[in-house]
Image (cartoon, rainbow, N blue to C red; front, side):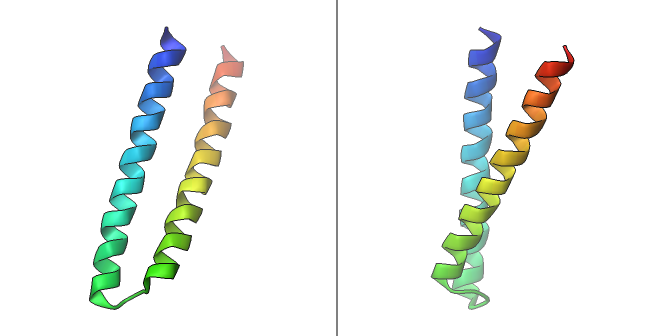
Amino acid sequence: MKNLILKIMNDKIEGLLRHILTFLGGYLVTSGVIDESILMEVVGAITTIVGFVWSFFSKDKKEDK
């Protein structure tokens, strides 16, 4: 049950992160700071890196118990 709750929370946090990055990226695109193709690459890269780091640390904590 605890694993299910953690998975749901992880999915919600990842979704929230994607929405925040898309919002901030949209602001930068409309301001002319970056273009749309760069936005998609940056958002994808950040979510991939955060997912990897999150996975690494969550598995590390499970092994400590």
